Length: 467
Image 1 (tube, rainbow, N blue to C red):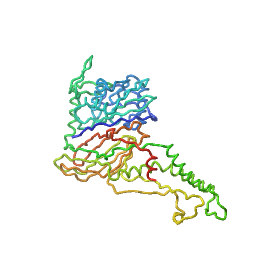
Image 2: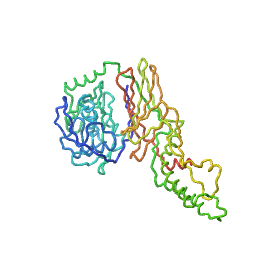
Image 3: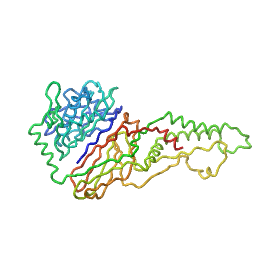
Image 4: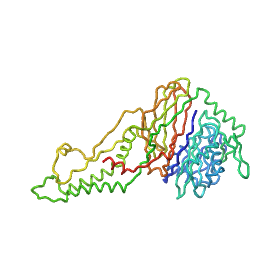
């Protein structure tokens, strides 16, 4: 059975991007009027710039431009039951769309934006991400609803973006898990089925339920996949790599100044032992500083990778079937701002120039004619494949055969977070997907790391520590 782990902290980005205008195409099951929104509806929006562009498009939209794939709220109290229910209700409705209707825009993905509306972006106060996630999730019942939330910065305010993944053939019907009763007005009972229509989320009619039953029955043509995935986390958790340009530059200048001191020691020409002029030596020192600056980030990644050498990450898959699964693929998709490394990252080892007038050693003769920046490859065999997508890096493990009721574990890998790309790196959430050649469908599992298992280290700490 699919499982929903506790989601990690959401992330905030401040970015921008170009937009295209595109009218929503007419759809046979979709009777809403034709709308105009200032963004391309042809593909799903996942990267930071795309989500900021979506929020900007909402500001430029008309009040009646909400659709089955898009809803906005000027503001909500995300810590209140009313605010959490409002989001959960729409998540259920978007998940309960027909596959054909959902595919008419954004590849079936739906979006809920809080803190923005046509004409203005007031923003919203976002409390602890885990509380927001738990508050929304308590109202979601039925299948594993594929959704997540994050935040983006727009016009100096924070906007919450809830992303509801596209419905698939064979998906079960989602419903309200918990009764909601406001202080005033009508609430909704546990078990209520909501559907998303033209800018509205409404209780399902008998026709809607029949459509959802048809969606479910599409998976009955072949046995469905029963498997579970997991993520093995190192004992010291996730490390965020922090930029420290000022610290790195001061460290480089200290090294350069130490070399330049040798040039200031004047000797009698008769004892001159250096084939370089002082100007040539200073050029070597300047080049050395530039090379150190260029290689420091990648060298820091390599040092961080080595720390995980004996305690790395891994994917696990449990076959819950009574028979073997063939040609199994297990993929982990990370959110933007995180990298996956299956081998030690490449970097160029920078060799310092010898001090001025220090003579020529045997090492100098051995390195004569070679560039000062030496390429240091560090690779180990691995069965994993890594894909660097715009919306986030992914890693895939392949297994030819997994016996009934057995667990398999992937080769190890390393996840590194980049603080410069993840503003609030107090945790992360990712999606693990299992597929098998002899089973229909796939199994998605949301995995996360608790904020207390996230630590930070600067580039300078890593490159200076190992010098």
